[in-house]
Length: 221
Ligand SMILES: NC(=O)c1ccc[n+]([C@@H]2O[C@H](COP(=O)([O-])OP(=O)(O)OC[C@H]3O[C@@H](n4cnc5c(N)ncnc54)[C@H](OP(=O)(O)O)[C@@H]3O)[C@@H](O)[C@H]2O)c1
Image 1 (spheres, rainbow, N blue to C red):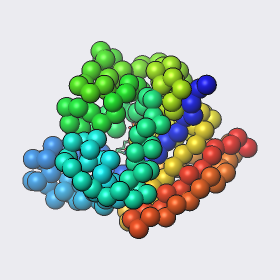
Image 2: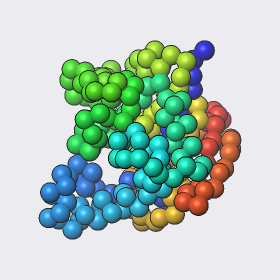
Image 3: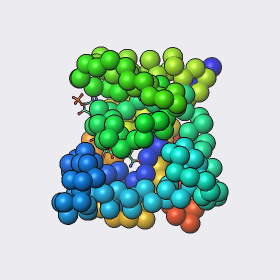
């Protein structure tokens, strides 16, 4: 049986999944050290994702060392990983990750990057292979479903790519880790959503001491 198509992101309380400029995302650690704006970008990003860093699963998956928290946040991080048989992402998310992910990228499954750039598959140790898809979001999703088998397909991000899938009616379910931070500006998750088409049904809300996890099923109006 085919799995679901879902996304799962951290969002600021005022609706942003990343601070404004992509420069901070794409900057090297050295560039960030020399430019306070880029430092600020990273500080905001770290605040948004702060719930994730101490989790045992996150630390294990990125080989950051033993130990870590083992509460509901950790279970959610692990469940999200385990349900995912393949991921799809936009090229800007990939560009940032290409610099930031360790050699053993943290997906351990095929990843399909929607892009205009033509590039051969990029195989990393540990089971992640990035495939670059030039013929649109539906083709990327078909390939991801095929690769995922019975497991689910995660639309990993970023905002533009998630919105394309949402507006095309291709998302079954999504989860948001609502972080207690305010950005004021940035990449807004639902900017441009087709509100006439997308209706939501609450599935669950789970508060943890760090964030509030919200899950919705997507229905067509
Ligand atoms: N908070 C979270 O949990 C979370 C999770 C993931 C990502 N993010 C953030 O999201 C940000 C990136 O998101 P974004 O919205 O700027 O960009 P994005 O969705 O990652 O990538 C958009 C790019 O992907 C390519 N693309 C998308 N759809 C395409 C299509 N149908 N055909 C061909 N190419 C297509 C295009 O690049 P080309 O034309 O160059 O190929 C497009 O400019 C980053 O700052 C990242 O940190 C946050």
